[in-house]
Image 1 (tube, rainbow, N blue to C red):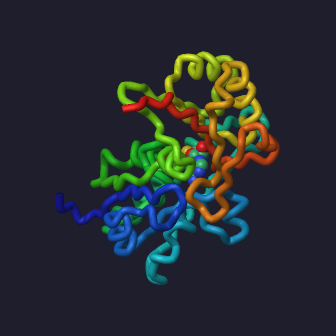
Image 2 (image 1 turned 90 degrees about the vertical axis):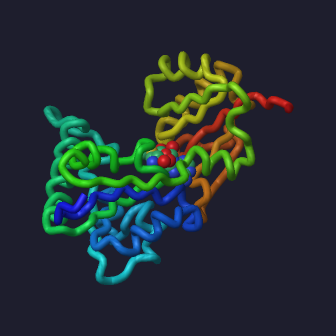
Length: 249
Ligand SMILES: C[S@@+](CC[C@H](N)C(=O)[O-])C[C@H]1O[C@@H](n2cnc3c(N)ncnc32)[C@H](O)[C@@H]1O
């Protein structure tokens, strides 16, 4: 489709190890004139580019435009009538307008995403806003749960088992109901939710089967027994993996 407009590119850059990038992601990243990257405000204020940016920064050329997309909020308390949903929706609207400016001028914009863009990636909210109006291409990345399984050395699902992918943000009761039914599970978005998730796993008798990993495949990776995790220091980039029961072929 030749439109004279730029293309929106959602680029998965994998879970952290810079070697876990696809050849296609690398090719597009090296040639895109604009690189969009999400970053927390605290990091942006220190001149840092964010997790995904750190993975690919070494491949960029000075002439490529860096477009930081700075989250206005993360987990701080908000005064009513402000809501997280309202603020973040306005933020994505603003990002989409900014990116559309580059696309209208004929410049491709590659928005990088840690792991895979369509697997809980912030890129999805830009895609939803822009893909109807501009050509969009998504390059899948190695998602974090597979990065975690690989560094843990635990096969995730055997044969006909189902895998539940859960968010640690879910209310405790709902988490318990879902985990009680799971044959294998990953629980993402731990951080300050860690203690709640561990409590549920203990109640269900799943704690012995569960593995905890933070910053999988990154230089600062840590794998800890569930009992040894300090709930106050569990980072956002952490996950609990409950592998399916081994099936001997
Ligand atoms: C917004 S989701 C992004 C997922 C990402 N798009 C993917 O494909 O994996 C963020 C969550 O992914 C998990 N995560 C991402 N990278 C991780 C890593 N390297 N190690 C452990 N967990 C990770 C954490 O649970 C974190 O809270």
